[in-house]
Length: 214
Image (cartoon, rainbow, N blue to C red; front, side, top):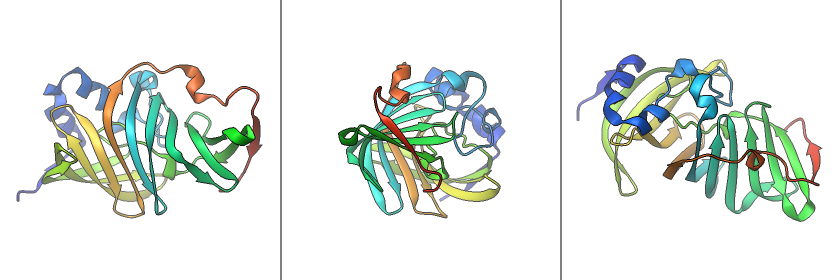
């Protein structure tokens, strides 16, 4: 098995042939601000899509649908996401406000928490703060043949390493697993499409409970 090292520039150059969809998803790391939300400058501010999501964090596995518009995310999880005061059927991540809003419909309540790296959902092959990557080889994600990379990034003042699975034909990130903490994400059925602004706002008539520490 051959091991190949890439600089970010050479990686993006080699991916340029993958077409318009790949170009949408392959913003360079310099296009991102150095914050946990992965908020982007330029065209990424208008980035909008939906996808199926498998998200593992803190020993929990969350399955559902993710909707994205710029640095705003809406996660509709199957069975709800457990919080300290009940299950949230919808979680809204607002990178622009550095806030996470858990929507608890039975209580007509929004639980607002400070944003952490747990709620980072990269959507580009080139990761925010990427330092270098090493190609490991071919690997399967479900029924899709992917290329597996070992990627090192620096963000929030520290370094972290990830395994990243990439669909080379479409230029899409399929799966990302941290090597340093119990966290991973996996996407499929990604669809570039416009998302309404109200998806990323608290429902009308709901009270907001602000919590400073998670």
